[in-house]
Image (cartoon, rainbow, N blue to C red; front, side, top):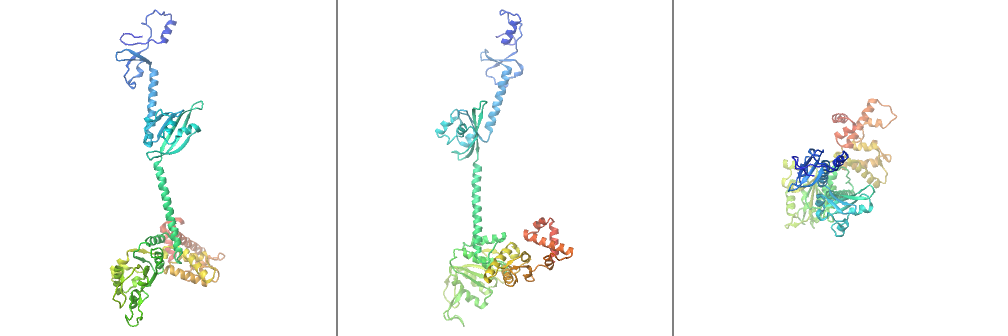
Length: 538
């Protein structure tokens, strides 16, 4: 009821009216004097958040003409405002989700889609709200619907989908049940897994690449096995072999460096076998083994009657013999200085002249050079031509000495044992003590010395088991090692302890190849390890 008093509009509720009747008031009584609720007018266009609920019991909504168009209790209004706030919070959460969210009712009718779903799928949510999932699938808007699968299976379901945006997604539908176990909604989470899929593809590529590298290494080992001296277990030496394998098919000059006996010729053969010239000849000349006055005729040949003692038919040189193949100039550092300029001309012009000849002969030969000398130092000293050195040093390959690749010692030894067992019809094998001696020796003669030693002990050992006693004196273990080989013999405790300590230090160093890891394995610091190792080396 409207009242034009100062308070504007006041309201009497049904409860007020019933209480008045119960208290003896008649229906003809006036309203004035009865208890009434405090009422506040609010305009129908006011923002509901701007209303101060605690100031009034009732709120009357008025229009532009200041006429009441409705009313509401403050408690009810507070409840509505709380629901609106909760709705806003839920809406914000759904919209801020990085994953796409798609919600349908129990009949698969679309009721909510967030912006992340639009980003992932490239679809417009406003074109889909209110539509049924089956219709969207039939119209090929979606390739398949996890919602329909959830309604059919009545359980959480996950599928993989790829959308027109190119994005790949993991789509999971979750059923929402009411108290009667009926599905009232299906909430679908759409997670963009494009990056994960790309990473998986990249991982698979890397696995294939690793397999390719592994196959390459195995092939390299197989090719090395075709040579009687190339056995590689040491990682550093494997890199040397991999480089040789890689440059083999490139027809360039290679300079192979390394101490005497490390296997330079075997590397040269490996390069030749894997080159485009593998069907051509492989020719080797030792530049240090041929007298200076004969080296030119050996390399370039001579015409008949070119000099006293020359063959009447003449002779072709090794460059012509190696035509279409590979020529290894071993011990190139021993090449006479006068011959170096002639070799340089051949390398530059690919032509030779026989001694006594007048015409140039074209040659198609790949040059490999090998030496145990420091050619750069020789250039500095003036004993080797700098221009020839730089012409040969296109691709240098340095082979490590055997003492710096100890992991190769025993595999090589076992290879040589097998070779000499077959050659001499024997069945010899190395014992642990013999292996220890081989590992502890420095091998100044490298692989060549190792092969010679193995041949010696194979033919001289008294039994099939080769022990340290069968080894040459320079390789044999120390005398206190022999004492420990006889466990029943009583020896001074200090001597026995020193022996055990020495063996453990040597074994750790041989196993790990460096002081830090060896010391860590023995539980001592690096400085103590070095001091003790020097003690037993003196």
